[in-house]
Length: 352
Image 1 (tube, rainbow, N blue to C red):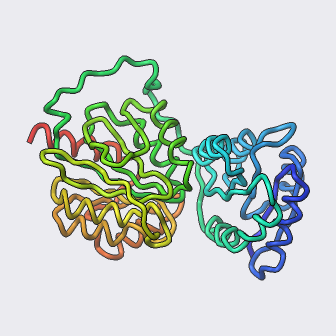
Image 2: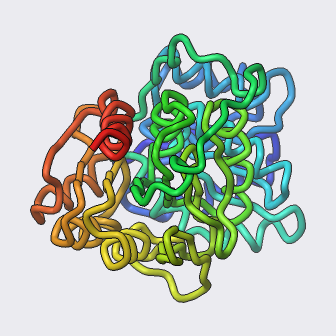
Image 3: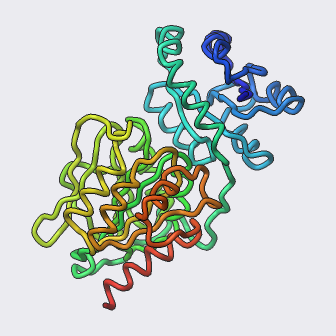
């Protein structure tokens, strides 16, 4: 039985969510509260397996509460977010603080929208209960990008044909921040699929761009891949790598979901295998399900270097586990080694 606690200042939201979940035989709503200070008193008497948390609340906002929970007793947390630009921005902050997922609610027709998405919410709760959220240590010694003057990048470095492809899902927002913040400006070009809803990826990219030495942005169709740049596939679209003369570029495409996801890691990895082969490093990181495992195998078979994140450092070991099971990963590494592997991959390109 998965024990769920709901924190939302809307009595209607609490009522509808409880009603949606009460009939499920494997889920029990053990409590609810209109604000975090009241919630923590009740939670300490019976701690939940999964917390459903709104962000905008009185007395203490949900983000502050989430950070407190993650520092004291990391708990799988789903963010209840509005479908707005502001809602997307603060939800990205919540994911970076340790939340394992987001579900969206409409401002109008609230009861109907929540009832329609009850099946998706139940699936997210079941997935969240299988995660192991953790508090990542801050990366030492790196100033925010805004405080540093841009480092010159030579044309030779800009035309490097080495590409790093990263794929992740649940827990990936924290993991990507940990990795990208440690990369120098002369690292190889990086293409990324992080499972994330539409509207969220632009805010996620902007947040990382402000934190990292490298440039990070949401990919646009036909963006060129080059040194010191990380391109994140936009939510709601697939991203593929293509060769264009001496360079690589990305294609941002619509299409049906693959492995229930759009963007899909498999779509990206398979295109990397076809068009870049041995010039690439593929890394599959924390995430639920098996998206990316077959694509990583295709990369390995094309001559790429391939890595899977180890179980101990994953929030959820689904995607890396499947890749390892299929023989897609040449090595299994802790998250702490991933930045070094990317730098070594780039150094090898420069120094032969």
